[in-house]
Image 1 (tube, rainbow, N blue to C red):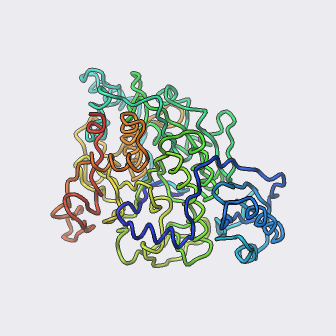
Image 2: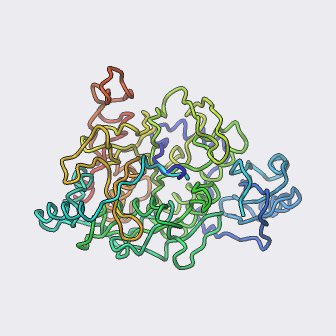
Image 3: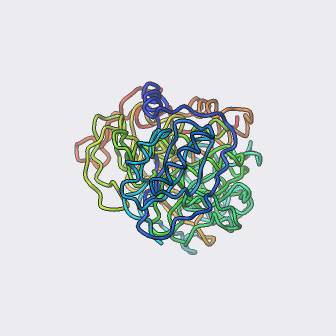
Length: 510
């Protein structure tokens, strides 16, 4: 699988946000429908590359002129998102990028992958640990001791750690609030998800064009379980079956963006997802991945710059339409406020090349984009999970993501990871910032339920104000070898491990 994981954002670093926007030379356009116009001509299978072409303006004259230039340079338009000035193109011309960047009306343009189109970008950490029938029976016996508990809830230490079990008795969330899971697809036939699933707000966005046909949003195979697990963490129903979600009363949608051949999350698919969510009334999106093929996109590279530009336009469009976007921080235990990070995993669709990047100049997308809530991961002891990426001024909030090494709960299964739904009616444990972000998204959904008129910015503020910050630990030597495994900078109110703190579902509904 690619990279299902957590990302980081620029909530506190206002100067960085402004410099990012300025460097891209783009300001959000007016919030109006961005319906794609699919080209009649389809690129044939072959040695094509996919590109995003971002225009200087969203007026029809500019879009038309750039479209003609694309054709002249040997490109075929796949879809045009005119209201944000993003055009998805396929071309076999090896000079297409350079030629189209020189065209009048083009702000930025670049390839979205490094290998040809063929006729995994998530942020979970480690393989899934499925719950067997015998294990489930033991958990159910313990859960039965607690009135109104779901059968497997005794293993859900994560709900109790943020007060979600108590919050559900006060306000489980509104049916008027939908959280869209932009991911590998959601199995809406799962008995814990079916009651809350919104098919009308779901789609398959792979390739950049939304497919809303029945079931298009479902995972390709049972191995593409990531999105289903995430969906359960957010909104698994309290229906006497399996587990419960943080916000079991809200609706959940699935927008599939993972490539069927390699599981990667390409930019054009993510652009489609943000626009689709915004245009279909989604209040919150969860993004437990990073956009492939670059772990960090550097603005001095024309291809990577175009990727940042295109995805940023799409998520800003969604924000202006009233959608709050949350993303995982990542599982590399990187300090996103450091001077340098070694990236040896990019590009992940061909041969990676080791490079040293400055995280203030090279961005993890979408987590470091302005307005996106960046979530780090914690374990049962409210300590940063060993794998979680962090960074002072980057992390907005923290949430349970699990820790199988150093934070083991006193639960029936004694599993430090997160238990949730899987395809085909199953349940399994996973850990990662991929699991932290949906917990925060669930709390955001509870806040939106209580404050239906709150804007994305106001929701983000509420999420931070109601969080509980443990403060930086005196020591973070998790393996006990005498060396600090990570350094937490900041104070009790805001710091690099937890941002403004660990989200609190109970405070959200009170």
